[in-house]
Image (tube, rainbow, N blue to C red):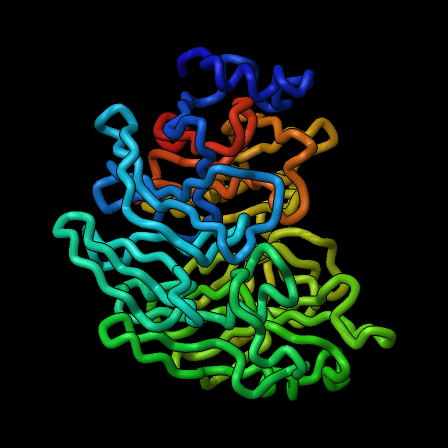
Length: 418
């Protein structure tokens, strides 16, 4: 592989820290910045299509400030980078419904070569915009969308106002929680969204999930919400994380850390199953229609990545020797023996995106990127690595270049071919 670029050197030089333990300075894969200042750019979450079907266009959010929470009047631009035309920025629209960790759910619609969707706010309602970047055709769907089915025909969404109340940074500012005085409301939950008609239907309510015992006891006197939805590869089932916080006896509001359990259900809302009852579920991805890879701490086992078989109690460790830290995990498209992952900043504030090979138990570092201390809490900048459709390129969000959060393209083709 070619020697490191300036940006890779800066990744470690800014921190005054050592290079990755696994690779020498000239062994990191090639990288380049594909967005520039003075604006800041990021994509957000890691489980959506950022690359179009041709792997030419890369989606991004654009904002002109950092290091504070969004307020209702803060509007961001959404656009795409043309990798074959000097990384040219192409503006697509704007959003007034976004957060630092997941942006505005900007993503390419599966099953379409040129349609993009993102969430926005219109008056007193959160909506979803759709845009065909080839024809310019636009639509507005009267519902947010969190995740899309593999064929793009339907989406699922939680209640973003509820999320904003419970965990700022993952919901949207601007509209109140309609059920803000209810611990587990019957009308807040997971909604099915028909992408052709825009029709929304409640599939699973917080009240319904509250009836399922946790560690043998009913969930009472806790504030509850849903987050992090993902539809199975065969479009038959979905995952949602059920979360809750204790009720403060003095103020009545939510307080302390949250607990989490993973729920799976059929896409019509039935056949509900508590896949991970530990209370420790974190990042996850479907491996196939029957298996989910997640970071958690199953009862009697150490924290780590595990493969769960849906609707069973079968649990198998994944990468226990080398995948020892929580991160944002996906399987590399067209190369299912590789897991793409990252780490949170270490003691020297370096973040480490990497590829892990399941067959050879081999971990290949993609770089060591410095995250300045002001990137923390709600407005931290996780790498959230996302792969191209062919699995040969990876894009990360990172502030290591000294000009705020930007998008960086990493060529991993030689790693997966080795």
